[in-house]
Length: 228
Ligand SMILES: Nc1ncnc2c1ncn2[C@@H]1O[C@H](COP(=O)(O)OP(=O)(O)OP(=O)(O)O)[C@@H](O)[C@H]1O
Image 1 (cartoon, rainbow, N blue to C red):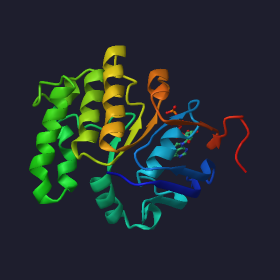
Image 2: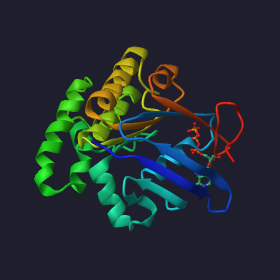
Image 3: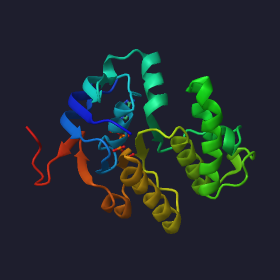
Image 4: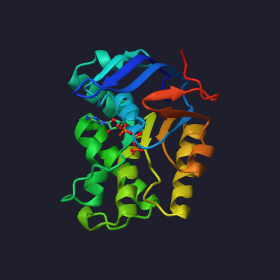
């Protein structure tokens, strides 16, 4: 289960005041997949961070269902994220000195005590499904593709309704990438999750229900003209 997204007049500026992202309006129904494409530096990761409530610099309105993300305190945003969002980061954000299972189970730290055991079990199952069997080996010895798969397992471990993925297939070979795309699409179609994925991968983008293009921090309409 998930919820609709409604973004209105969202602006993210750099610490020097440069506008990195400006989204007058973005609406997404629940249980829909959205691909975000655009050149390097266009603001794709900036948008994903804002949608996850991870940007201190986002202004305007980002509503997930009835929750105005930008009105929440940092602690409440963390709670919201733990309950609702699974995020695959572009640079994985793994703890090198921890093993694969410990990394994939990290969301358990923020989950209610009663949910922790199920979350760890899911993290182990996700790792196995993704072909990671060395559960205790510290991830500093993992290849880029293995690290990406641990990051994916972590994002899926809390069975969140909203999946935000930043280049989730970038470090995977074609077969592994296609298998992951099929998994993610199945989660949208069969489990009613919302998926928003930044990607340069044409296979991934072709599998999404909707696609938007970002250029210079702005969403382009299909004709190439910018929305008013
Ligand atoms: N904290 C920051 N302070 C200043 N500028 C930033 C900051 N974070 C990102 N930027 C700039 O914002 C712009 C958008 O960056 P972002 O990472 O969102 O782009 P992207 O579309 O995800 O690029 P890529 O495809 O290369 O990952 C870039 O010009 C980047 O240099």
